[in-house]
Length: 460
Image (cartoon, rainbow, N blue to C red; front, side, top):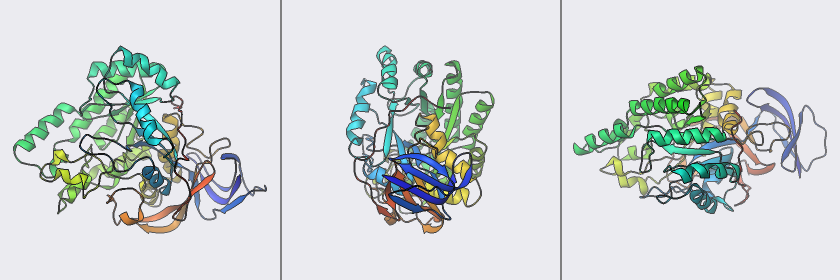
């Protein structure tokens, strides 16, 4: 099967050129002007941007929180991803039984994803305790399972203490694997949560107030220090929500620390005033870290532009407002943490970033595709338009105006945080390994066509 994409504005993280792309058997085999080859399909991309498929390295599909289960599984979640122009995901697997091996949860997630996903997928391991067995198992997971990044938490039930974090980072660094960290100081969170709950301050705004910026800032600073002590081990800060934390990442990069920063659309477009919406609608925005004061947004955009923040991912973790989120009525602490966003990431960043000239089209490609692919070992098969790469390609029509409505989206959830956002530009074709899986609002893929990606170590 062969396809030519003709006359597109082909954008990579490094350049923009007008030309054609020739695809054969799912692989890009030629890029140039006026390619003359026989092909089974011709796609006219005149006046449109042709970009690498999005790589979302922070999703939570099938996540079990204890009180609730995320309502997108690996089928519905990856269908929504495809409609939004994302062609690869790396999912953060959830906690398993106490004392379980690293492989236990990887096997569980293969059961969730295999024969269900419609785009290609990988997993981040999760480390919920540390002992000799876990340390020794890491090599097998990296080299044999193709899972080359692991997440640790500084809060929640399976949080790690600093000595175990240091041990983990050191071993993963030796293996070339990345440690991803949810950075919030657990002691600060517990103190303020108990402070507000004991005083019957339980509405959604107290979710934000009980998780202050300083809790994130302190944790980021501590993790940068520990990673340095672990031999400058690769450190990936997930969902940076504050200017203060981003400044620490900027300083660490200047000091040649091997640290990467991620933020998410919710921290670029939404702010903590939403927790005060009437009719309990503030529950929709309960996520961790919480939404912050609006001034952070412009500063985070600047940190994206200057390369401090390497990636914009989603932290997609959806729960229905009319069901699971209602657990938080009368007590914010009982509301499951998380919000949807896997489908709206690229459209939002293209419209608000590229079309409003906050970032270039090249930076857009870098933060949504190329850099996450490089950091997490998917590159060069994913994350670029180059000869030999998988033909994971998205065509964006910059003249297609859309107003986001939940009923137009494909996420399996009853709300979107971006209702009535007006967008300029929208994906019209999504290709995965040369196959058109979404075209002009129609799904053309099939359940289970997505392949598990055995990742290499970081390319950065």
